[in-house]
Length: 317
Image (cartoon, rainbow, N blue to C red; front, side, top):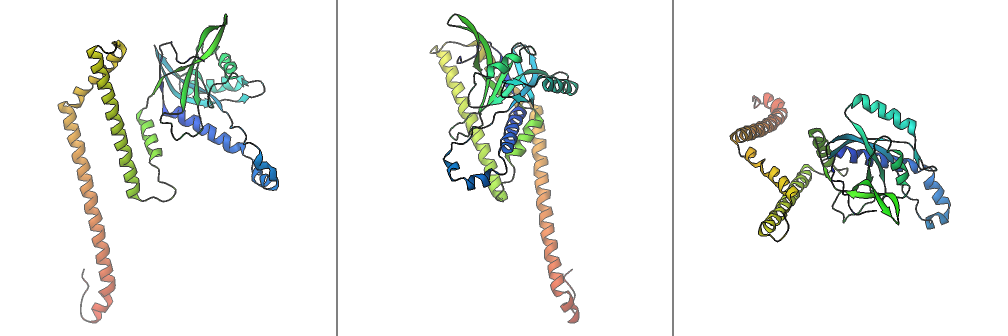
């Protein structure tokens, strides 16, 4: 397996694909645990000494679009896999492809996905079987094992390249870099999942603190990456490192967005939204105060109404 790809393709991966693969793996893993496994292990004393079974692998197709040298993976669907022959159910694949083509006419099968720590030799059999649909399919691999020290996403995208090994041309998997691309609906969904209320009944203050901590970490990470980019450009300007035109074009594209943020229209829209937010906050505060005052008056009237009328007094309101 080569270290990196030389095709020059740019891959953009949407969060929906990662969620689909993770959900597929979770369901298959939970279904693989038989209900009578707990009672069977209790009756067999030597069962605990046996090594745990290997985690199941899931398989499916990834779909999206390719515009020039940019490949954007939008969605995925599951496939039926035969482990004895290391092959996919072709009839099921063609049926799913036809159904998705009716709903998403612009999406095409870009490749396939699976789970595991690394690509296996049997994966190339599936990869070659999909070449009649896409002559250069991509392979998205999700590592389901938990590694607390890992900061990057456990996702790897592979391409296939023809290399000559010992005088024999062979297809091998090579790693490709990718970026996460999101649309508004995906950002809302991911944010909703990230801010779900914990099962232990955490308070609103705890959730707010966690939310602010996440924002602070994101800003800190953005600041550190900007500093790295700034130092890199300074070193390039001094001639310490060679000039890369592709990186300069990306930096130039990023800098073109800055005047749009400082425009008069942006300031007007920002101030309008800011004032609306303050107004809603004030209204919520007044409503809360009025509700508290009404509850206090109701309690006062309930406590002194009957007794006050007997003594010649009237209620407060």
